[in-house]
Length: 466
Image (cartoon, rainbow, N blue to C red):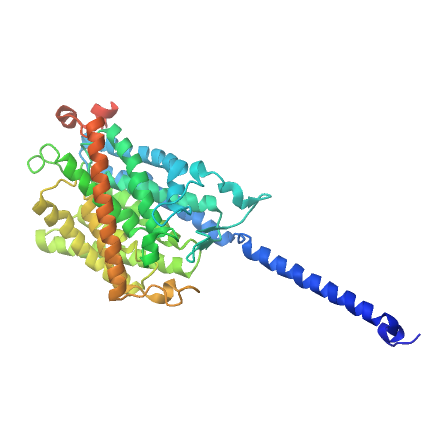
């Protein structure tokens, strides 16, 4: 048999075969094109390492509220209000979880307008759409935005991670009105505030189509959304409610600083999930955020302790734990944008400024911010947000669409300043209106007799026996 090619043996059939081959080639190219297009449109597969880290981070942030913040605040009130203070954090964990599930998540993170999200995830409708035949795939936030964020974790985990932020933020506010707000008023205020203040600001800053995000605002884990927001709302609460009975005259010293130290320690550990988890992946940026968090907290704890030591002659337990928490607050917006040296600078500056905010400023202005929600979270959040604009290191946040990343500069400082002012104004005005409406409808403050007896017995019918 001849070894010549088939076309040479059958020259008459050559044109037909060439035509068939051309058609087959065209079909193959078209099929490959369709496959590539499908692959481009399909959700990304999940990364098991990212998913494991985000599951861990979510649990760590939840621990920050219960038991971390609950113990931190309970240790700083008087004995007759310890259970009521613990109750506030625990009840808010329950209430805010439902509010976030019903509407908060949808308003904060779905595509709507630059001002507020849409309603596509009300009651978490459709969140299971990213599970196909039992196999999880990732999802994209703001798919129609040039700043769209593609996640390699299941949407359910992202929703839960953000839920823990929505839980702790109103719980932080409770430190400002501790020992004098009605429990019913606290519940109503927290629900309305979460939907009217927290969700919109979260959308402005963290949604890819949010208008502050469009300006280039850098808030890695919640300097504006969580801490300035909570601090300003706390200040408004303190002003509207007025001072506690006996403020400036009676002994209002903490009942049990042991509780407060344990709570602060739990907050510190949980904050690694708060900040490093905001990288939304197990990657180098998460590692740098974790390092920055530890260094800033340590720096602020030391600087607060030294200033207090110099002024009063003694370093206090309450001072060093307050300083460390202030450092954790300040590094929150910066954690994924700065290097370790800058984190130390932020911590050292914040310890001094928050000491002033929690002592001199409060006494000078005459308001009763019971547990320094504004002095630590409001002031610390402002310091951190502004210093992020000066100290951000571009390569940490560089992407294909933004190869230079967020770079510290006067221009970025101005962007940060605008975001800080917007947060203060919106939160301050909206919080004031919400409080005044609640006061008209059900009242905000317990009676003088209830406050004297203590909220444990007067509101909850319980007391600490030992």
